[in-house]
Image (cartoon, rainbow, N blue to C red; front, side, top):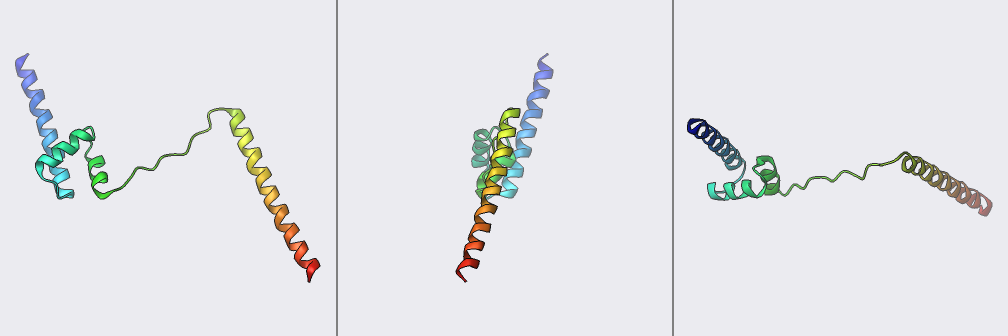
Amino acid sequence: MKNINLVENEKVYEQLDEKVQIVLRQTDYTEEQAREKLEKFNFDELSVIRDYFGITEKKEPKKIVSINQAIYKELRSHLDETMRNYCERKAKSELKNIN
């Protein structure tokens, strides 16, 4: 049982060292800073590198959770488009009447 724990611990340390090396190659962090950042970002090397370069993750817009919301969203967008077209036609006809 002790041998299994030793092997598992060695694998964990090897994986951590690999992640530290990836961060070191992509940034100018020291090894200590890289380890700290990895701990801060739950050992996700891509998140550490994104943070270093100042890249923020895009938040996806809220997804529609019900059929009724989808229906009303489509109705609203259709009515908005119709009103926009109406206002454009009205403005064009007023310009023609002025000239």
